[in-house]
Structures are given as C-alpha cells and as structure tokens.
Amino acid sequence: MIIKKLHDMGVKSEHAYLAGIASIGLSAASWIGSLKAEEAGVERADRWGIFVGEWAPTFIGIGLALSHYEQQDGTLAHIHES
Image (cartoon, rainbow, N blue to C red; front, side):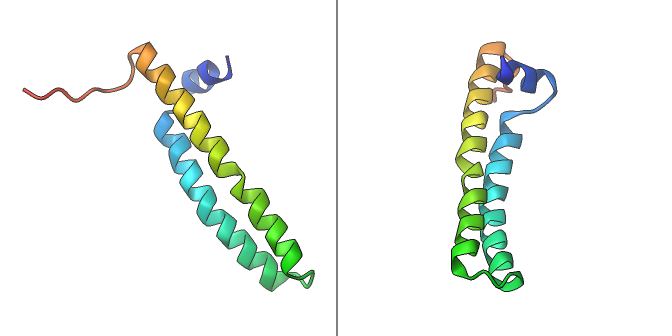
C-alpha cells in the first residue's frame, strides 16, 4: 500500500537508492559536524552518525520494494538487444 502510493507519487526505485547513498555521506557529515560544533564529545557525534546512518538501509529497502513493484507493474524500462 505504501509502495504503491510512493509509485503513484512518481518516486522511482532509483530515487530511493540515491537517497540511501546520500544518507551514508550525510551520516559522515553529521558525525563530523557534531564533533566540531558541539562540545558534547565523541559520544554525541557517534549517536548522530549512527542515527543518520540507519536511514541508508531503510531507503535501500524501499528501493528494492519499488523495483519489485515496477517490475510487476510493467513500468520498469527494459533494454532489449537487437
């Protein structure tokens, strides 16, 4: 139901995969930013990095579900060799 709604809104599996990759970079950036901007220490930076880092598998899972839905729906572009 959620995957169909995302698909109907125009979200493609590639979008979810890109969000997963971007969240990995954002995880590192949030860790560095927290470490430098706050005086709470490494523990707080670690929490921020882990929190944002948990988004990557979620987005990749959504991407896999969307890819499966696209294949069933027939909207996935297939490359045919002549």
